[in-house]
Image (cartoon, rainbow over all chains, first blue to last red; front, side):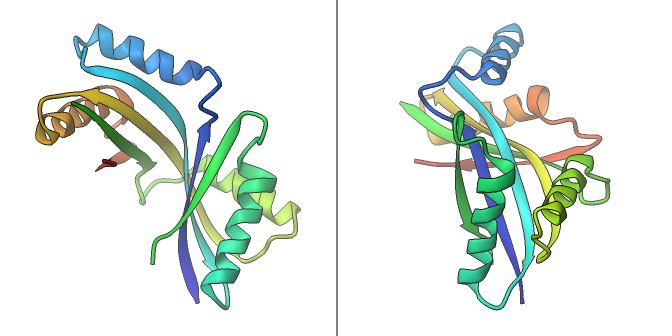
Length: 82
Length: 82
């Protein structure tokens, strides 16, 4: 069966997020002042062929851990869509 | 009140996604063959100070439209967290 999985990869809360800071700057320039904090990460959607949801989740976890997220600077969250 | 909002910005389905293709290549190199498709976009979390949820959503929409997403190549989805 094909499973749709989404993985969110975000910078760790303790670390600076230069891309988020840049968006904050852009918002000020546009006159939008009510945004207090911005953090920017990656959003990855995967289509995984697996025998079960557990197996699909396991493959997504391996993908995130070995390829998508740098554990020193980022954390990830996996969510099954269907 | 402070609202937490997340915005997902993804490449349009009709378009090539070179970053996704690169991840697919990486997966093959790692011996993970059960992933059939990958698309990579941005995940942005905002903290918005607003009087109501409707206002917060409106600000998030303006942020996405004017700053985060390029409508020619990307679409976005807004989700309120709290």
